[in-house]
Image (cartoon, rainbow, N blue to C red; front, side, top):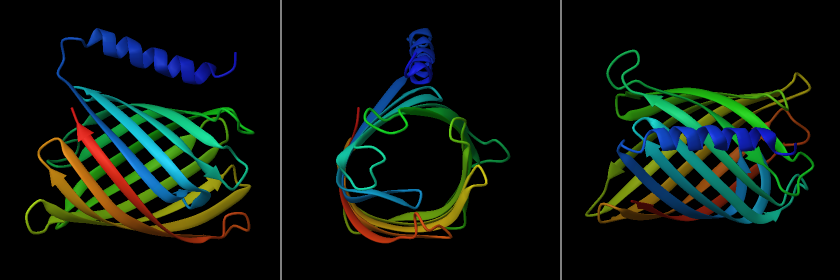
Length: 228
């Protein structure tokens, strides 16, 4: 049946949620405007709205994303995805966190209607930086991706803070297509109370080693987040 994997993923999520009704629940939502949508070094479209909702039950979380915009690569015209994950704190030593999960992607009008991806990552503080490394494997398309990110957010005057990050990644598509990519991110964040924040920022991305995805893209974004 079409979209079976995504339905099964959501079924597992629902079972976990109903079995944890007595657990502490937290939730957050974010809406972002992206002048250009670039994902893992691949330029996909312009003027994209990204909406995200995350619900966490203890250390089990559900993250649902939707993307709508003018897609330029004829891969899809919008996207839904849902991730079911588990975080474990202080895995190797204090401050080192493990994140593992599965993501189901759904492309309503795409050439590929759905895929499923496994992921695992570690994050830890190193000096004044937050360091994270993630590995992704799509079980349908056989695409493997690794991403290393260094980031820092430091406080400015009053409710303002400044986020900066650099990500370096590599993608191998079943030994048929491979390329590397780098992305620089910078955002000015304004916290309005404990629950609401907004930000404006920009990203610069370039990728190489691929005739299909040889790009250099500069984009800007505006986001608003609310924690329930």
